[in-house]
Amino acid sequence: MVEETLTEEKIKEDICRVMGTLYRRGLISALGGNVSARVPGSKEFWITPSGVFKGRLSVDDLVKVDLEGNVLKGSLKPSIETPMHRAVYRRRLDVNAVVHAHNPVATGLASAGIPIEPITVEAALILRRVPVIPFFSPGTDDLAEAVAEHIVGVKALILKNHGVLGVGSNLIEAEAVVEALEEAATVQWVAYHFGKPSTIPEEAGRDSQENESDKKL
Image (cartoon, rainbow, N blue to C red):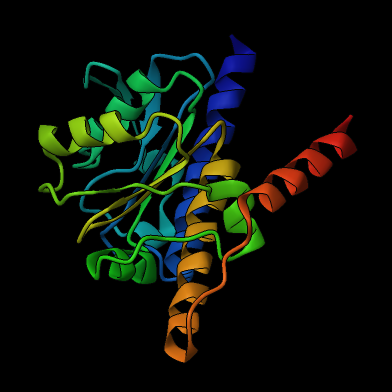
């Protein structure tokens, strides 16, 4: 029991750290964006609150919710995007962290009908395919259902005219996905200014991933 409590406290601290990082990098606004995470295998998760300054959250601001949407702990209102987070956890048992940010460049490219391509090593390794889903009003069941449908087999989604979604087995991975997505989008945007972007071959990304796996053995 003590171990679980400590694990949850660490998760809550990491959620606040991630929100602060995203805010400083301009990937979320003062009141926009949300992050959630859970203990692996749990049917409950911690999520950021609604209507609170996101650049300086404390662990006491966070809200604990179950997969049915019931608030279990916390005095604040959970994020309006809680249905979207719930949908991801219900669909992806391997996901323990969800980051929803408002990446300006990635969102802008998608709004212009330009898909994110594997233009950087990180994009080729971490992102690969990034689906763009049509616009649905924030916080709606329609958005949650669309995310659940498209999140299978990918680590990132772009929500058209809205923002991005990154998932991972933990918060570090989900945060890395969102940051790699914006980096790739920025490089692609610059490349379009001066010519045509050149992408990394798919097999090169696979080879790099295999080499990284060999190092861990």
